[in-house]
Image 1: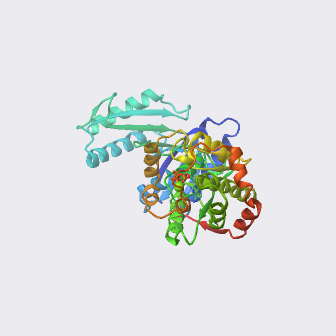
Image 2: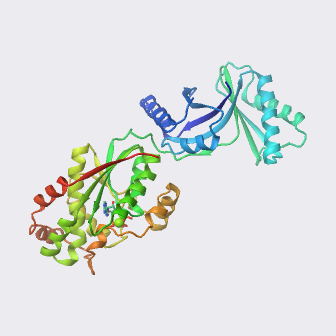
Image 3: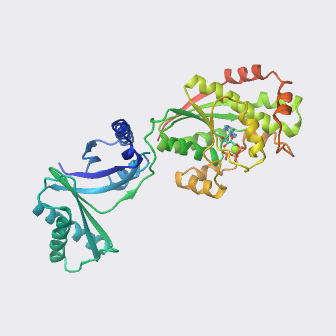
Length: 393
Ligand code: ATP
Ligand code: MG
């Protein structure tokens, strides 16, 4: 049966020492998962490459699009497979280049050869030269350009079968999902936290999420928006469980007993404490937020110190040093931006103080907290937690 072939190159996985087989196995596992919905997929590790073979009728763009969202993949090339024999390679190269001329109007090219099988009788520079010469004879419109060719024809000679390919589609890099434990992201409906989750998942971390709302002040639509954001993330992060927690009773207590300007920082500390409890229940090793130095009042250096002190878990803030425009660009690339900018209310906007404290002092905040039954409030909030599992569509 005729098949389409894709060569998948690993990024950093290839640099791993002793653990390389483990990382490769995890990567193959992820590719298998994202392609699971198609029939007749074959994925194998061959000569240090991952080779995916599909039945002909699955469009190349679909397969490449799906594989390029797998963390740990550096690039993908649709390829042609031929017998490892000079004549067969030359013939295939001619057909390949004729197609390039017809479909893309290519006029200049260069052949680059690599010999994975050192017992192959022709050396790499000679393979390139001989294939190039045959192509020139067969395709009169072509010229060789070794510096800036319109088409680089790669010939990758291996023991039994060799590959020819041209295009290299860049993927995301990173490390395969599941190679770095699990993190719990505090997922709002905003631009930042989905990007933060994406960046941690890119380093191999499974993602689980906690979302805080102030129902009925926040609407069902705001909650749908959070689920939609998570659904976009599942393309990269796999299934995401979201724990949804109502903060309203806590916010009401703060309003009654604490200074108005401390509202935001007090709420943030409660979020951290509740998230820490959820993390313990779910086996999450660390918390992840979309906080960013200086972006808003609750993210000044002083505020971050006071927020941090609420939990003993490490809090990962992968966006800490990024500018808003950089974060927005990344959100667009991931596909979360258009959803994130929908103008639904967030729990933090419900009791937004007019003048939030930008330089809170931990001692003063602890004093305010002591007026509340923090443990009881946290316990209650957790009792009413709802959990949904978001899966890729
Ligand atoms: P985002 O764009 O992610 O909403 P932001 O710039 O609006 O971030 P804040 O509202 O101060 O900033 O929130 C900072 C971080 O706190 C968020 O990135 C997120 O990790 C967490 N957070 C804020 N609100 C919520 C919420 N309702 N549920 C869960 N986490 C939240
Ligand atoms: Mg927000």
